[in-house]
Length: 393
Image 1 (spheres, one colour):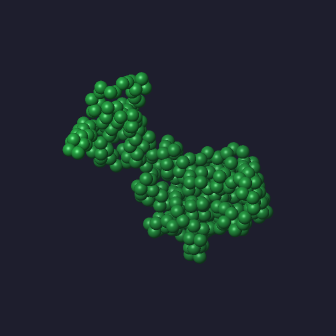
Image 2 (cartoon, helix red, strand yellow; image 1 turned 135 degrees about the vertical axis):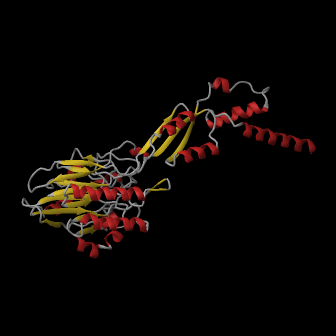
Image 3 (cartoon, one colour; image 1 turned 180 degrees about the vertical axis):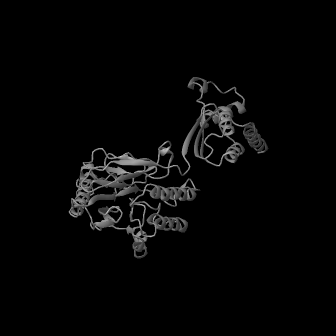
């Protein structure tokens, strides 16, 4: 049986107001191609299908259309669990229709185990699927004491107990897989993951993952990674797109593996090409360097975080020209040259012209930038107006 593991699509998510829906549609097209080319028998989606509990209608439409395509009209089983960003009721609302296409949508934590039969290989998959298990979704209060360490231990015990209960359904003759949307201690996180746990309390130890599972498909962390301390093969497939600049340079992928009853699984990554990369530019030589890169066509199809070293402040017109030359600029952050020594800044100023005093003040406030001539002129006009009013009194 050939299985594909993916997670953290975050459909509907934006980047500083820029829509990523087109990129997400490209990813889902690529995913459909992968499952067909790789002869995937079962698709596992480990949570955070959407970015918010109330996703845009276009994001929901994209999700359900893609589910239908992935399932190949019921010929390929697909299992989806709710993540911390998903509305469990909303996600599972379409279950009566989805089940007719072999699509399982699971909103709330449960110890029920799915049984999935694959005719092509004449094999059965036992899937212990655990959606995001917060206290509210479990409908439990795990600790009456508001102490992080105690709550963490209680939470870890509860999740380990649920996995243990589900593991009772595993047999030597079936392929035994677990799937959940949780934070496992030791995983490497990024800025784009809004917290799944409060103060670190919703954390599961790697040793609490089900040992009798041949593979644990995890969702939540956006960087593809294997949990080293787990006593079985446990992986985060990662998000298909980079959702913050802390993920700049990360290779995005889905995880694929062949599974047979009672045999060890070896997972591999299939790298994704869809979506715009997120890159950081650091122009230490100023605006000229930025314009040179733009003329070269550097990172033409990318979202860009620009840090540009300057002597003078950037005008609104200059910022507008940059954005017109490349629509992918997300941040444009000027970094001014450091001021000269404090000794120079604290020289006697009583005999200095007023425009020089203003220039020094402006440099201190901006970290070393020189004011534009128009700004200095405006300042002097205001000062002269004040003096004239004073003379009239």
